[in-house]
Image (cartoon, rainbow, N blue to C red; front, top):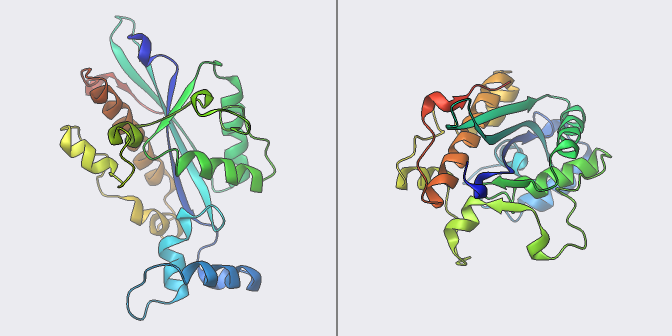
Length: 238
């Protein structure tokens, strides 16, 4: 395995609104959501409740984490580069995050976390929800007092920007650009809330999340000008 591929833990999370619908919010939180919603772009006749269903899951103050998927490069018995994946999925966010923290506390000190747009979404979302649930931050997420070059985080979107901070580039666009199989099948991120609350299908969401981790790990290889991992060398989760 190339040295630059060691000690990277690829990561993706799936989030939903903290409650199924706007009507279940306390009056205090309804008022807070109304303030947030006043700054959001909305379609004609779209209510605060409609916006909550569509958008609450992307805000750590109003959403919760239901899946954390991870991937790590490994060498198989023949020395072939492979990808080992794992996921944690639970409707009880505190149980999920405590299990994730326990895992992070055990990883090698040289480990770096890598996600797509992770520095603006996954890593801060995880940290905020851990604090809300009274879970001490693991060292890999505790950035207090660290200088920029000491932060053990990689981000494939940031790698693509090459210092250009003017626009967001989606994972799916980069997968198309580099001719990497898309992580999007029957699902995309906009459907997670519906699949969780209406279809009650957490396993479907977990599978989607794992596929995103595989896509990010493959994209990282292309950004290092390395060949993709063959499908048979992507090891099944859990």
